[in-house]
Length: 353
Image 1 (cartoon, rainbow, N blue to C red):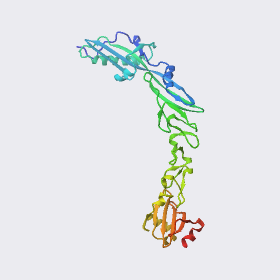
Image 2 (image 1 turned 90 degrees about the vertical axis):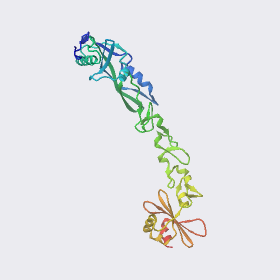
Image 3 (image 1 turned 30 degrees about the horizontal axis):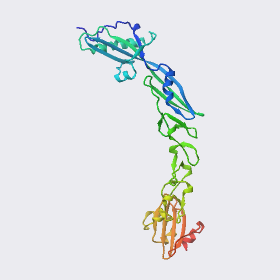
Image 4 (image 1 turned 135 degrees about the vertical axis):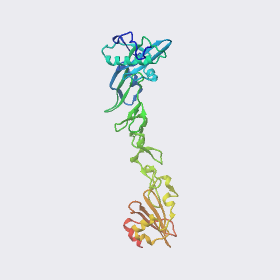
């Protein structure tokens, strides 16, 4: 009885071992460039290889037929068995013979050949191993390098690394938007980005990232943030020319914030007691206001809006929420509509009278 490890050597000596390569894998840098570059569109610029290395990596194919059985396997350069999916992906079943110096990688090939023959022999169900096991070196190319996209004086690189046969144009990932694309363009500050993310500011005409624009709530225009103001009542971004002035608090607000000539903050004053912490802070900061009763209050993003009523007089106050400084003070008479705005220099006098 023969031991399974006691395998007869291949009929061909190692220096006659076939060297093969997948028939349809790219074999030159030029072929790699032809496969990658046409996939990209660079508005106003170009793309080229900024470096490419094609490295031959060793696999070993071993197989035999014996007693009606057929066994074939592939090993990588470290002696690990290659999954069938990778064998198919690399085209190792469709090869052509290539010339290779016999001394190159001979020690690795001898070691792998011995291992492969033993592995093939063990897989036969018959006790006697096959007398001949065919072994061949299969050289698959691995490609790695960089693509360089250039627009004007600016450029950006995209690395790639993959087996040459399945190598496909990798998408460029825009670091500013996260968009993956094969279409690149430059914005006005020179940054190279995904072309799908480029938009024009409708106020300045600048080419910028779409994500850098905000929408004017009044007009729908997409503009840079520097061209808009934030409505203190609604929080909407609005072009200054589209803001409207509230007839009570005199603040500029978005058109959507206006009701009957008043902003929502002034139009929705709710009764509040002096125990309310907002009013308590205000009365502590401005003791002269403590003379007034029947307070109503609302708030916007930047201010408290308050109104109070006496027997005949009424008071309107707008207070900065952070500093509690008086932004507006107006007085009026309960028997007539409208308000008389008090000049800031007269605030103390008006509150004492």
